[in-house]
Length: 360
View (cartoon, rainbow, N blue to C red):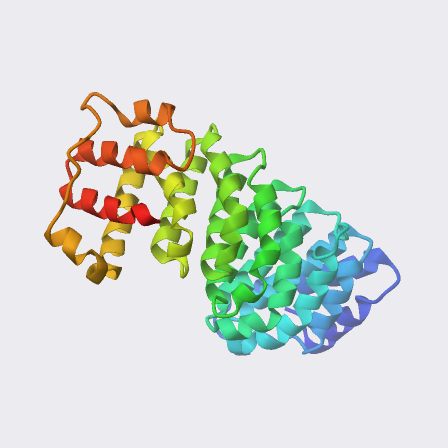
């Protein structure tokens, strides 16, 4: 382990004009901190001076990729060692966020290394995880959004994927204030929903669901059409993600009843999917949505529940959901197909709920 004088000397050498000298100093500091990670008692290890993070952040603009990588590695280990709760992390976040905005949040890619960009997002994700107080995290909401709206469309697929995951975490943690800036993320997320990698598309769909769920619900108007296009996706996990997102919206969205007429056709489309898991998920969500609607509108539906007036005309028994879907091309699909769905399942209660939803 380094002594205090050795540590201070290595910190001074971080500003040396020679890149090899800087690299050796970085390596020494990283090795020292790495060895301390296995020590439970911090008293057995010399705590780095308070100015070391500022010195490391200056290396972020170092021309040598190896040096930038070592600086980021050191900061990541420092967070793991000394920032186990949010009380120890406030000062670090104050220093880190402007640096990451400069490296990751500009229109042009300042950081050329894909791995460094990925590790940077990993560090930001860890910082987001440590925070339990969303209000503290929201103090840097503008910086978070500036970074994410750029990294969500990063050329490197893994950066896109991890950025979408971070977006979901951030929207949940900062839900009280997230609506103020959530609309800035809609366009880049929709763009990433078309990415060639299925796993990236799935994370983008999940991120869109969370951004609208915890952010501005009005963004659903711009998102319904791109989501509907994902039903033509050849990967079943992507289609399942769409069903889950729409189902959660219909159950949890604050202004959900204002957008029921947009979401209902998407959810019901899941009944026609060739994958059994998607059909079963659709049926489960549809049932939960109906029960919640009935519970929240119990007074309005009291007469219909107690004195049902079930239409006598039903489609013939041989008419399946897939048959009916083939000749329905507009939103009237909901009104014509609902009888078929519930005729097949013989769920009288669901029929009553479904017909009460017609006004939406």
